[in-house]
Amino acid sequence: MTHKVDFTTASSQGLIEALCKRLDEIRLSRNISQADLAEEAGVSRSTLTRLAHGQSISLDSFIRIMQALRLTDHLAALLPDPAVRPVDRVRLDGGERQRASGKRSATAPWAWGDTEPEA
Image (cartoon, rainbow, N blue to C red; front, side):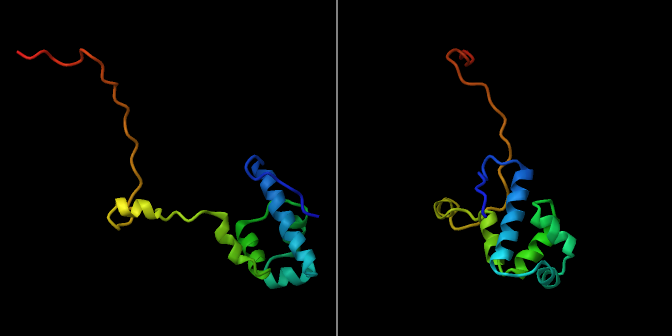
């Protein structure tokens, strides 16, 4: 049974539990035993038991399980593409960004009477 989790407000532990349980639900929906998935993914059965209980597993194990379940095409959706938007490319004359902008120091706002009198 899929549990609805608000990924924008869930704690890191809540996200771990939701992702692990979802992977286990996919395993079950495909009628794959823990032993078979463990062998295919190259992880231990205890790792899959932790996964089934929504406990933390290593990122390496998570990716291996995703690969064994043929879910790696979904990994790209985890993080947005950092490419510059097309409108920004026009502003950059077709060039790619080379570095992030530095922090700018705040300057005091200009006010009337701040200028030096002319001599």
